[in-house]
Image (cartoon, rainbow, N blue to C red):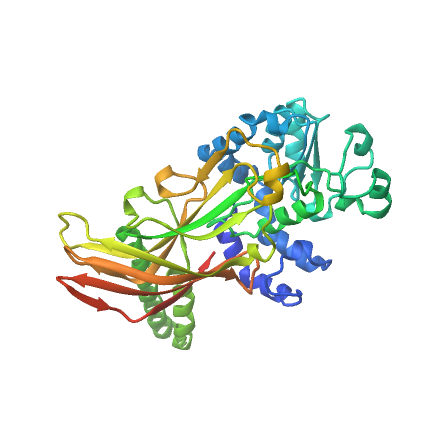
Amino acid sequence: CFAAQSSLFATAAASSSSSASNKDDDTIPTFDTSDSQQLASDYANYFSAYADLFHQKIMLTDHHRMTAYYNAIVQNRHVFKDKVVMDVGSGSGILAVWAAKAGARRVYAVEYTDMAKYAREVVRANGLEDVVMVIQGAVEDVTIPEEDWDRFDLQMEDGDVNSEEECHVNQPQSQSKVVDIIISEWMGYFLLRESMLDSVIRARDMFLKPKSGILLPSHATMLIAPIMNAYDHSVIVKEYKEGMVEWNDYLNNLKKQYGVDMSILTEDYDKEQRDYYLKSSHYVQLEDDVILAPPAVVKTLDLAVCTLEDAKGVGETAFSFDIESSEGGEGDDEINGFAGWFTVDFQTRTDEVGKKFGAKMKNPVHFSSSPEIGETHWGQQAFYFPSAIPIQRNSKVKIDGTMEMYRSKENARLYNVKFRYTIAAAVDGSNNVMDQVESVYSIP
């Protein structure tokens, strides 16, 4: 998924007042409140960008993204044949269209924004309106249409309820587990940003057949690695420093020309600039050769069984990287920070129940947003050090530490990432260990 970084970042402060009344600071208001102000704030901060065709086009022109989803559906027609499918966060409706073309007998394309009207047009233009039903609204509020039960012979799994009659009488329609496949493109920057995974988990628990139902993608992995990206790092530090020089020049001119002293604001302005340039992650499209060590896995998710608590972030997770200076290097190598990205897989269920009853994906698909794949609209997130760590010629550097990721208290769709680490450099048999460093970054 894509959302303009500036949109969510700029409105984080505006959302803080509305989030204060939530049951929990990391609760997503769209499905946890009837407060119209909170709902409007969540729409403005997050959903509104997805109503624009321009933003949809950015995702639709991501070749790696499109190929992965297309192959997962089209190359596994046997999984979709005569099945009931739900597309969560359908956007333009393209995944729903592919599912219908792959043989699904009924597809529910759920889209919160006004992009739903364009999805309906796409569905009609492709002659699939009898199969694909576009539903505008939050998936948490969706109800399976009463008429679909007979028209599409909707069935719950044996043992889920005693009979179809009991299903109608005792269970709310929104709790009807008649969906065979949930497909969704829910991933944000560094996988979890935007917190859309919550809606996918809730849709799974409300609609998916618990024993045989599958989610696509089925699994997700988050990874980090140290990087050498000196030019971009230096540009960011330079922009911060130049910004402070411009601020001081402004103060001097203000006092000289207008007789007003605003230097009292310098500390706050500096904090604002540091938060933006030095304490935020940065969207990057890295080349493969900037990765200094094999990546470390910091979180894995099995979509069939993961929980809302799992979606809230990454618990404190250890990592260790061994970095050697490049062969024949001139001694100007350096470590500029960490980069984070994700992978997802479209494969057969691996949980014990799913392995027994779930559909078999004969043609599994793997997708990665890593630098080695090439550009995707997700790119990577770079967490730059305050200062680069030099790697001396013919030396080895070891970084040991932990990473933790948690939702921002100001905006539950945004995350903070905390790194704690020590760096040991071995040169000519000696071993120098730096004090432990702790850095917290926001993912804007």
